Picture 1 (cartoon, one colour):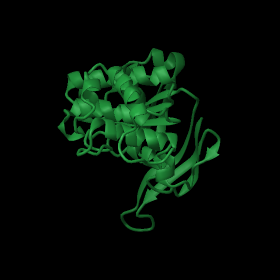
Picture 2 (tube, rainbow, N blue to C red):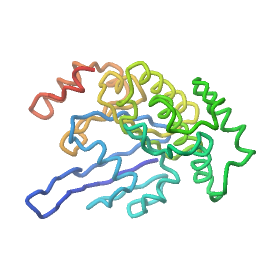
Picture 3 (cartoon, rainbow, N blue to C red):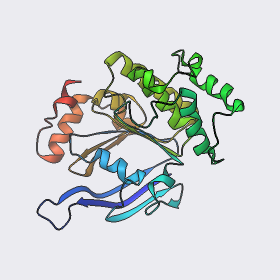
Amino acid sequence: MLQLTNVGKTFNAKTPNAKVALRNINLTLEDGDFVTIIGGNGAGKSTLFNAIAGAFLCDTGRIYLDGQDYTFLPEYKRARCIGRLFQDPMRSTAPSMTIEENLALCYQRGTRRGFGIGVKKSDVAYFRDRLAELGLGLEDRLKTKMGLLSGGQRQAVTLLMATIVTPRLLLLDEHTAALDPATAVKVLEMTDRIVKKDHITTMMITHNIQSALELGNRTIMMDEGEIILDLKGEERENMTVEKLIDMFSQKRGKKLDNDRMLLV
């Protein structure tokens, strides 16, 4: 479904400030896979997402989605079939526009029927039903401006925006990190429910090792731009946080010292 072959990226190449961000990444996701991604700061997690989403062109390798070569496809074209959520609830929405207007923009883009003026009446009922699934009462606040929502409400709507038309691939870049613990749990539950219901191939970056092992069907660990562990099946089912930390130490010859990962 998603295939990355020998993908590499170096920033400031051929300068004293050269930084190898991705090192020969080879990764294949099957249709419906839900992959959680962990790693310390600078491991290459968000850079990997940027490569897939087309934020920059890679130096080496190829990227395929559903058999189509996306390697040189512009970011705005990839956005038609790749949904993405960021850590900041303020990103990816228009705060001065209403909930229904934000949903309409994503719905029109995803269905490729062009952008019209205002919100089509025929779509309002659909938006209301989808918002009701979130269980936050937002179906009765379609006219509320996005900027007036709490962080958790806004991130929930953003999740719906990214999946209002089922994407081929969903990228979740620490989308609960800026939320309080209780709200983060709710948004993760919504995420899991939507992904399963619509059978969406998903990649989720998280610093919470326990969540990484509990959500989805596969866990990848990155370090210094490389995928160093790829856990699935029985190996993942029997994995614990302590075992994973030990595996990292054995694999890299150093201790995992990222406080965010060790304290959650």
